[in-house]
Image 1 (cartoon, one colour):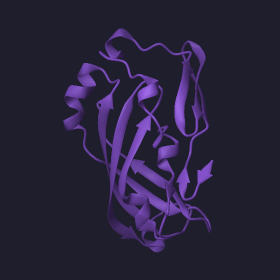
Image 2 (image 1 turned 180 degrees about the vertical axis):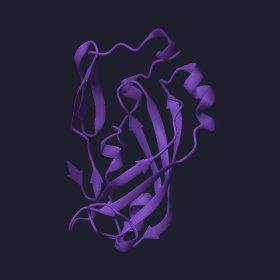
Image 3 (image 1 turned 45 degrees about the vertical axis):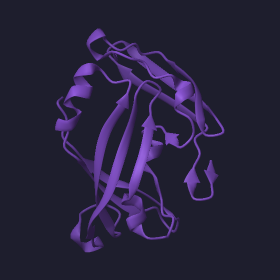
Image 4 (image 1 turned 30 degrees about the vertical axis):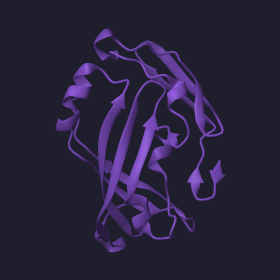
Length: 169
């Protein structure tokens, strides 16, 4: 849902297929705060967190990782997509994303199917809680993600056309 120019999450429903079949998770929200998380996936012992996140501690202002990719354009300019901090929670892990604007990309300077102007953004991921000790220890080594944001039609919202980042996997 929308409240002014901000997204207010209501429900997250995910499913995916792996070697074990189809798995799914869901998260319910009340007034924008997560209140319930159920998952058919159990992390492997090496990927388990040393500490779990109490869902009641998350509160409002935090979204799931998918909704966090959409950006309200509060002033109507594309630079709004790449400014500030976003807090994300996937039901087990809590992190922050810090976005800063980079270079503008003219419509004729890229090869995306949508021939519209874009903005290169720098996204820095920082774990807060719920990650394995190994992930927490290596977080500082994780280089920034580059996301190319563009306006969604005639709306006051933007979404990434492309995201590039390095992982250990």
